[in-house]
Length: 286
Image (cartoon, one colour):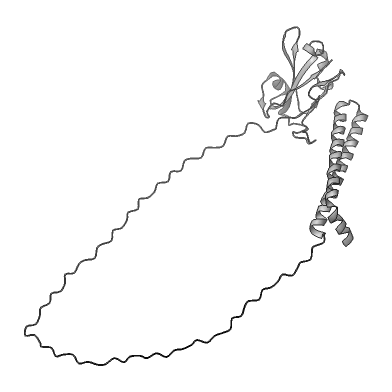
């Protein structure tokens, strides 16, 4: 057991480096799997990408547990260095020296007779000194201090209750050759769902797709309001119909979480924003 603990203590830094390399490898596997899941449209390939992502999470978790186990063993179970005894300094004993008493001579006072005094014929009249009244102490008058407390202003109520949705598919700058375009959002860069997958009945994800119309020489807009965090051709968004109508076949899209009475009110613009607008992504349909 002691040899094993000494081995861990000696090669701990190499084990930590191995764990970090393994975690980075797992992160790369996870990003590759998510990229494959976003770029494919087939269910089988998406399931394979999910399996690779799960294995990547297992790899990262295994190396993390390895680092935590080595650190815990070195911190709590590792061999402790022997404690060297410290020199105890004994106090110096000073020998007792008795005090030296020196005899002194004391002078004895002698009694002397005082000369006789003649009594006065007239008693001396002594006048009592005038009494002076003690000064009356003056008390300092302390004025009360008036404390003015200004009323505290109420804090402003925040307008938004959600974060700006993160856009996922199609990625920014993507060129889509397929005629079926799928939109999804809400998953951040770490793979976490930052906004709800499904919103309440009075809240909507407002998807806006804009492009420059060749015929009208003006910006055209497609708007769809949904409760889910993804839409496709089955949900009513068919961007392929405007492939030849858009200048350079280029489209822009963003998402905002809003509150509206119905989906029609949301699409018409009668809504209350509940999140900031997301970033605007661009894609092409060549």
